[in-house]
Image 1: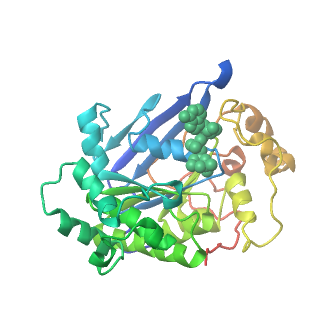
Image 2: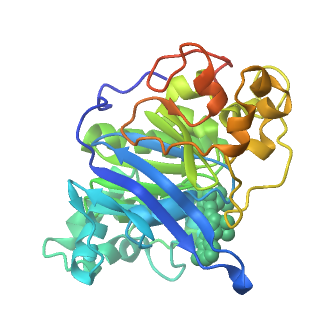
Image 3: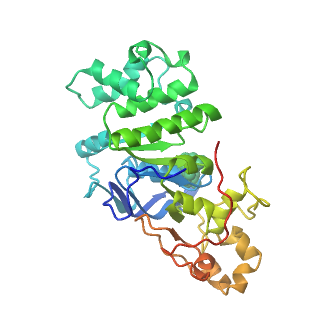
Length: 354
Ligand SMILES: Nc1ncnc2c1ncn2[C@@H]1O[C@H](COP(=O)(O)OP(=O)(O)OP(=O)(O)O)[C@@H](O)[C@H]1O
Ligand SMILES: [Mg+2]
């Protein structure tokens, strides 16, 4: 994939920005609190598509919800268009018009008793839209690829295919003319062919409308196909970020390398991560990945003289500005591999979803 000509350049002022973001949930049964988001800086620039990837439970949805103003951060802040989010009712409502959440339909985002028309018009009604509702609904359906839109007005979700339902969900977001979409696993349950169509739709919306998007996904192949930039999350932190081609063809963090190694297209032996699955109420000291790290386990980190640091020295929060960066003592110790520098250590063939 080549970057779309509309992909913004590093240095453009961000549309949405998280700074030092923390979201901590109270511990269950008197246990320690869960640091679901544990220090994240992340910028999304106008027209940019950022993929947020990582294993189940690493905090992707919590981060996405805090960017949407659905969860108030415990520390840090979210700014949109240069202004910090204000969590009081009215300004949050205005914000939620500009930044829309797209969930996958099987998670119940469409009401089975509402027609397509009502599902799409709902947002307009909530926000007291004063224009011509019918025209706005038709236009949103059409933009989402449901044409002619009138043919879909009176249909119910069960009369549609999975891909069409996902398009209705997207139309419901588009009808409010947002500037940014946050899509949480938008295609996880769709067939591969339909998945490609929905991704193509998201790319087209960026080109046609200049929409920005944060796409949350388990699926690195999907990230490769759609995103300009990828942020790899592990246990509440972003551990590697950069242009999608760079991160996915030359991953520097052992965690990113492990994620890529288990894709069916990956060359070489898969890296099976050992150790306990990460628990945000027990974030390890040192590098939060160290107990499962294949580079530390293989003594490579020892040879590089960083094993002590891996076990004991926490890493700095990566800046959100889109430069290529990694939070790993070993990767940063490799010659010429400082953060921000272009490096091509540990190349792996690029995976593709299709
Ligand atoms: N409301 C909550 N109260 C307590 N803990 C929570 C709450 N929401 C999430 N968590 C915990 O925060 C951590 C991150 O959860 P989150 O849903 O953000 O992960 P995720 O990366 O989206 O996972 P998945 O890929 O499975 O959707 C998990 O350990 C989860 O159990
Ligand atoms: Mg999630």
